[in-house]
Figure 1 (spheres, rainbow, N blue to C red):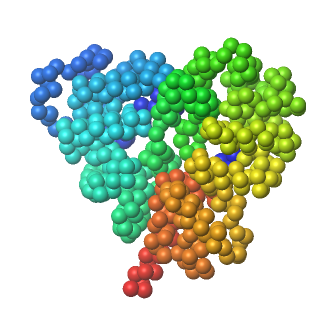
Figure 2: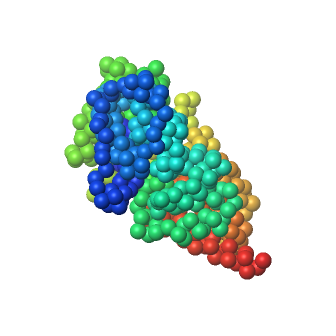
Figure 3: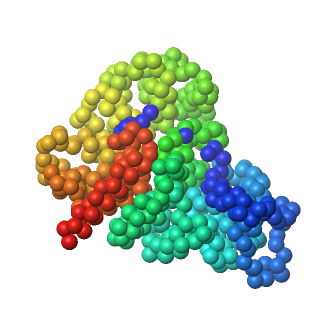
Length: 498
């Protein structure tokens, strides 16, 4: 279920095999296989005397061969820590992996820094810095550091790295062109941004470019969010337990995909059963529906909800709002015909409003309420829910829905109230591209937006690819590409005018 118009199952330590093609290319140039160093027995510490020895600069081929060997060994290390991954002990797993990295040299630090990219960004950056100190001017390390600083919006630190990388033997990889250009946009070097994108073969590397947007700007790893909620729930926070259950059924893996995460589901229900009373409604209702919800291959529908006494017919809304969200979503996804949204809204709106607006936060109830209101055509009710989701829960999806539903018809000038709403949304969610785009369109009127306005939209779109969904029906670089053409045109016009 996706109110407001909107699936790695294991610990996401390995972000990607960094520029693995470079190993093959370097090997082809050298005419021989790169010599892989002998790998130590698993997790064997580096002797102190060796660690203190000044590192010898490795050739590009040797360094990447070492990285590949260290990545394989680190994966085995990671497997030993799987029991920590979904039990609220993620910090322990990360700390032990960092300690293991520090026992090795630059290649190990580099490999594990990549593994920790989204899971522990600060630890990842620290390891990449130390790898750079031991093996300076390795382009692959410069690349990672440039990505780190760009992600942190520290463009003053990122830009010199992108420039050094551009002058290196590998240049800026095509899939990273938009990311490198982002910092040029942020620093006001709009022509520099256009030059980077124009020089890149993005059309033949667009999937990598799109994925790179998520890797750099997608935020904390889903497992990190799960771990935080798990620890709160284990401490008795009922709201966190609800969020934990909902997240296990809606696990985000990238811009495109959300799906149930089996290990997270099992951990969440085990913790919930330990928290719930033996005969509580939450426990009984989840237990009744769990076998079918846990196995997404099983059929699911009205009869299952009726048998378990929730949601349909004269039955109440589930005691667990997360169960209501998950069960309704599964039902709608499997139904041949959509349910009667108006009847469901009439039956459950009261309890959903009470939960969403009550003393405890209940985002799951609000999401279902807004979804039913949208399906039932209750525009006034949806506007109220969107306001609540935006102002109380600070959820970007509700703000976006509110702005879009209030948008004036084509050809109608926005009134002051709508302009104020748009300005507030842009202030509250500065990385959402729709708001600066609308502001630019309204300012330009019948003319073309100036280059500075296009650049602001481009920065936000690089971070989310959101406009590419709303106006292209797919997550791709389509809108980025079109915006860069518009930016280039605006710069040419400015230059001609000057």
